[in-house]
Amino acid sequence: MAEYDLTAKLGRYFDRHLVFPLLEFLTDRNIFDEKEILQAKYDLLQHTTMVDFQLDIYKKLHPEGEEPKELIDKREGIVARFNELSEAVQRLLDAAVTEDAARLIENQRNTDSTLVLDFLQKKFGIERTMVDDLHTFARYVYDCGDYSRAAANLGLYRALVPNNDKNLMSCLWGKLASEILMQRWEEAYDDLNQLKLAIETNSTRSPLDLLHQRTWFIHWSLFVYFNHPQGRDDLVQLFLNSTPNQTNIYLNTLQTTAPHLLRYLSAAVIINPRKKNERTLKELIKVIQQESYAYRDPITEFLECLYVHFDFDNAQKKLRDCTEVLNNDFFLIGCMDEFMENARLLIFETFCRIHHRITIDLLAEKLNMSSEEAERWIVNLIRNANLDAKIDSQNGAVVMGSQSLSPYQTIIEKTKNLFNRTQSLVHNSERRKDTNANWHNNQNQQVQTTSGNVPLME
Image (cartoon, rainbow, N blue to C red; front, top):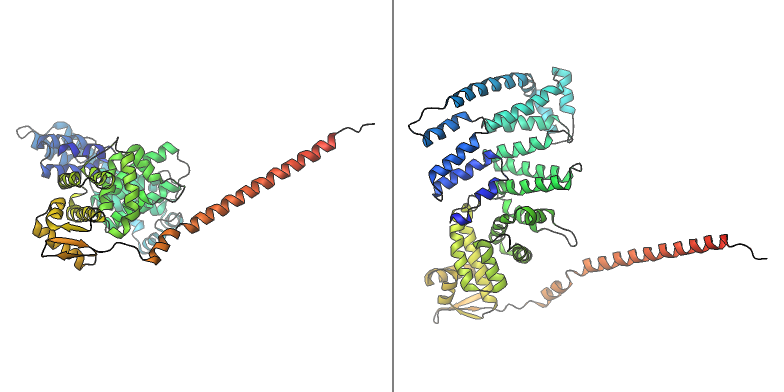
């Protein structure tokens, strides 16, 4: 299933350190030749200071060869530079771990304040240049692969600088990457939300720069959203939580620069609990149809077959292909069981909308299950109150219950948008009233001006 592999597309928007977990995953899946993946790792490492890792890869690529002299020399230079930067920031690091400073840093973390820096300057003689050196040192240790130290130093840097600091965005991106690579998902989740806030509140960036920032953001967020318990709900909200008459900027970003992320949005919507999907499914199908010329895969085609063409046979075939796609996708492999369960439920619900009585054998065929598995699955749905139906064991069929709405629910459905429509009418009426009043005032002023300039006739 290499044709559906998105590593090359995703890697364009990842920091090179974030690409390594994806390459490790591909090595285990045996999708590509192992030597090609090793060469890709080696090429990535050329631009980092992780020389030992680079030497290990080189030995695997050239088992009989000697260690390259340039890598040995590079290691010596890296150690010397590390010692130099470490010495430059040591006074600041020692001052930051004192009791008073640590308490103040914790209280002022993620705030737009220079209280901590003022305190360190007065008590320990810490200069602003040392703070800049801390940022340089944090970037260097991150490049060396010491993500824990990088995260700690970047967190300290964030506590020392205001929101308009020139290196703030670099600090936030680096902190997020460090937490992701250490798989500390709670901290990464908080960092992701801080980064989003920083992107949206920065009024100095050009629209093109903001588009680039949001494109990187929605790619990096996949690491967090598919590993944090609340992540998949947030992923759906990020793209499909638009208000009337207002464009969703992140959905617009996806459609403009990254339609391949529809795979992950579609998977998140399918996996979400059914009660949250009534509106989001409709919005998602609309986006899938709009972007079908730019991106298609078995997951998006499964939804298209089911909700656009109502082609259950093709939906079943696409669902089988989805198994392979999920099994070879770094972000989705952990969602395999949930995805298949909820996808079968979507097929079942859609099929039941147009049938009152369905044989279990037919359902088993549509759900790609055996008759016994299908019957047990339906029994569990009925038992968990997720299905209004009963099983006719004698005839091997499922009889659906009434799907009609109660009078109260009918009224709610018909009037749920009444308030918004009324508000819109009132707003438009007031705006038209103001426009007419301004027009009459202008007309009166023109009449007065004209009458004042008319010469007297003798």
